[in-house]
Structure formats: structure tokens, C-alpha cells
Image (cartoon, rainbow, N blue to C red; front, top):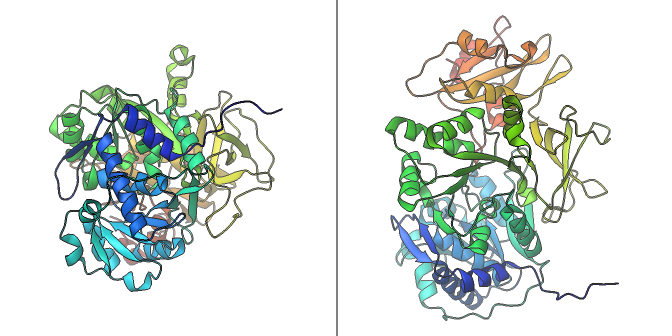
Amino acid sequence: MLGLMQDRQLTLTSIMQHAQRLHGEREIVSVTADQPLHRYRYRDAFARAARLAGALARLGAVAGDRIGTLAWNDYRHLEVYFATSCAGLVCHTINPRLFPGQIEFIIRDAADRWLFVDPVFVPLLAGMQDRLGSVAGFVILGPAGHAERSGLRNALDYETLLADAPPAFDWPELDERSACALCYTSGTTDNPKGVLYSHRALVLHTYGCLMADGMGIGARDVVLPVVPMFHVNAWSIPYGAAVVGAKLVMPGPRMGDGAALARLIAAEEVSVAAGVPTVWLGLLAHLRASGERLPSLRRVMIGGSACPRAIMEEFETAHGVHVHHAWGMTEMSPVGTFNSPSADFASLPEDERWRQRLSVGRPVWGVELRIVDAEGRELPWDGESFGSLMVRGPWVCAEYFRVGRGPTHTADGWFDTGDVATIDPHGYVSITDRAKDVIKSGGEWISSITLENTAVAHPAVAEAAVIGAQHPHWDERPLLCVVLRPGASATREELLAWFDGKVAKWWVPDDVLFLDELPHTATGKLSKKELRERLRHYRFPGAKCDTDRLESEGRK
């Protein structure tokens, strides 16, 4: 027997129309390249989105066409988000921080029909435009005049395009299973792979994120997504803010500038912000140097990489800001877990509270998790057993765009995340490492993440990375690479002694390299792959080492 309920489709169009009707007067504030601070309201955003949808129809875009974007977090990008997806097109956000060859591959693989581009990225596309056969033309996200100077074929100015479009658009009735957005993985080991999201997946993902023990964003919040809109939909914040009517503040090209973020948070009274650890390291460094305070900021959500305890403690003790750790992947839309306190949190001993806080949290509703051993046997949730972390759920990728079902999917629908993790009896997940980053020493595994978090807690250390370096006896041993805070100093011996009593003795790194900077991926994560490549000739003290080559690759 089936239920007797109305069958309404779960689409991003319903989010847009809900926000337009209930939250039309709520404000959206943006930093853009052509305007230091742009203000308007949700009602204005969706009216302009309707004009854009009509303009795209006039340009010949039809249902299912991929519309690419290379753009920062700002109001024009938000308009493209809703105009494309709600018109039955696919909003394909492209990470401009990828290598040019990867960007060209992604555009060609997606067969994008039109590209919407911030002016700063025009030179990036100019050299490859003749190889982008599917692209009919380029829309420059700015006022009139940029297109004519761009040198791109069939280039149009965004504001001119909207001004010439009809003011109304008849939004189509869409199947909730139809594609609405496309995002490619960072492709650290192979060509990037496309993850094609459906309306249903993103609506359910938004529901999951908005729950009280998820992001918990509400109508009274002022939300700053520093996490980029060009990667996994800015963690669904543009959709979630529209659902609840939160004021939305977008940093545009200033998303990595600690001083600019501090000014924006203070001026707009931001209460909730989200981004990767490197962003918050920069903000905290600025606040430390300037003595500024951010009284409106209450919560910060951190994902993308492990959040060191030092960041949490500084935010909370110096600024009264609670830090939530979260975890997810492009293939998961992206949120899988979120760290909110358990019911008994207040009664736990301090070390237990910190153990819980430093985990990536529990799975939000809609995500199932399990850990398995090398033979695929499920392991217990005891907080000690660790194995490959696998996920499934209505917003988890079933197969890759064009590639089909990949080797990371099991026959019964589980997706292997590539992470190694433990899960405690309450469901809190601790990521031990990426499978490719685990250090195997003498047949035993060492977590690089634990060592990095310990190192960053040292007052002189700004950032740290630990990789496994070749060892003649133990196969691999941990090598600690650190960037010191400006004006700080520390010795190799001091940093190695810092680990005493904090980790097992045999986990303590065998050496320390002091570097000017660490390599990062296009999404802001530490690039262990690049670091290992740079230090491929490293040998531990006492072992044979090509010192000239090593010094040229960054050892001091």
C-alpha cells in the first residue's frame, strides 16, 4: 500500500521560490573586483536570475547543457547558480586554482556550452579557447566593456546580457532526479573526475546540513562562506541560507586575506563562517598581530583538512568562537559528518571532551558509514579498530560523469572514501589518515594527521606536514616539515621533544625540516603528493643523502 500524500518534486527551484516569497528582503553582501561592497536583497538576486535564465534560452541553451563558471564567491556567481539549475541546465563550477591543463581537460570533458568568467581569469582561458570546441562563447562577469577587451571569441558582458533580457522567466517543472550541478574532483593522482549532482541530492543534503546538530544555520544568522562556490557548492551554504533566510556575506577575491576577512566580519556582524584551516590560520595571525576582536562571530565551521587543536583553542580562548569540525568529499555533495556535542558532553572528563571535539563528528542524517579491513570485513565501532571508511546515502555519488562506476564503489553500493578512520561507540569518526598518506613503519601504521596536529600546537609553528620518508631499516619513518610563525624560532631538538608524552615514542618523527612554505592543493589542502615529490631524495641523518639536491628543494 502506498501513502496518500502529495508528490511534489524536491528541486532547487523550490528553494529559490520559497526564499523569494518569505525572505525577499534579507540582504546579500558581496565583495567583487569592480565594487568594494555590493548590497542587494534575495528578491533582487532571483529577479536577476530570471533575466539570466531568459538570456541563456535566447543564446540557445537547452535542458542538460553544462554552463561553466570560473568565479569567486559573489552575487553574480549566486545568480548563475540558481538561473542555470532552476532552468534545467547544469551549473558546472570550475576551480580556477587548478593547473591550466586540468582546467582545459575539465571544460572539454564536461563539454561546457557557455563559460561565465570573472575578468581576472580571462588570460587563463585566452590561451586554450581554440581547443574548447564545445564552448559557444564566454560571458564576462562584470560591467560593460570587459568583453570587448577580453580577446575571447564571442564574448559578452554579463550586465549587458541581463539588461537586454526579458524581466520574467517561466521556470520549468523539473524532475528531482535531473542533473543540476557538476563539480570535478581535484585529480591529485589522475585526471579529475566529474560528480554530477541531482536536484534531489542537493535538496536532501541541504536539509541534512541545516539540522540543529548539523550547521544549524537560522534566520537570525549572518553567514560568511569562505569555502569557495567553485568547489562542491560552498558546502550547500548558498542553498541553506536561502532556505532559512540568513543574511549572506560573500568575500569575493579577498577570501584568503586575513585582514580583509576581519574587516568584513566586523562590518557585517557575521555570526557564522565556514572555510578550510589555512583560511583561519591567516585570520588568527592577523587578529594576533593587530589585537582586533570579532564580537559578532559565534561559530566557525572547518573542513577540508584536519583542524588542529591549537586553532580551536585560540578561537575559543581569545575570541569566544566555537569551532565545529566537519568532514566530507566532492563525491558526497560534500558533507558527511559534523561535530556537535553529544548529550553527555558536559559531564565528560576534559580529555574525553577534547577527544570528541577533535574528531570530525558524527554522520548527519542521510549518510551511512562503515569501516572495513583489507578483506572487506566490517569492523566494530569501538574507537580503536581502524580501517577503510566507506559511505552510502542519497547524496553520495553512484558513478562518475562519463567514466561510469569507478573501482571505489562496491557491488552493494558503498563508496570507498580513501580515508582510514576509527568510529567510537557514539558514532564519532576520527580520520586517521588518507590511505595514501598513512606511514607504514616496521609493519605498523602511524597517523600523519595526529603528528601534524601535535606539531601545530607548538607556539612557534604556523603550519606542519608529516610524510613518510624512506628508511633503510624501518621501510618508512615520519619526517616533520614545518613553517614557523613570523618572528618565531625553534630548533629541531625542541620540536622533537615537544612530542614526548603526547604520542607513542615510536611515532615521534626522526627529523625536522624547516621550510618557508608548504605546498597546497587547489582547494587549500596540504599537498602531501607534491611535498613527497619535492623531498624524494631526502635521507635521514646518518643515511646517504644527496645534500646539494636536498638543499635546492627546500631544506634549511
